Image (cartoon, rainbow, N blue to C red):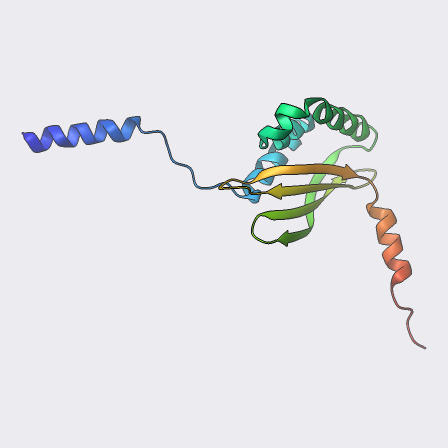
Length: 149
């Protein structure tokens, strides 16, 4: 009888214990960002910055500015067709840059995330976007060694 009561109490305690989630990763953040982006780019921008309380508390106007400028740009370049990772750079174990090419009908846009892990969780330290990928590709082509004859 005592064992049965103890088992019921243990089961009740387990059922009321909040779930423990593993430490988030930058992949968790970008996966959710891109899932939201495919549905609503504005919400994705808000989500990305929401990972960092310092940005949300001190720079809401800047976040809104980034969001509005991006929404304005994407209305001019056609339908969204997905994304590809371009590069990832890491400094130590707590600072990471990830760059993605966002594919649109007219032209690609580069999204660059800088992630920072001050303690146990990653946050978006900085986010920016630009439409200079084709310019950079042309520059790389000019810098490539000429074939020897």
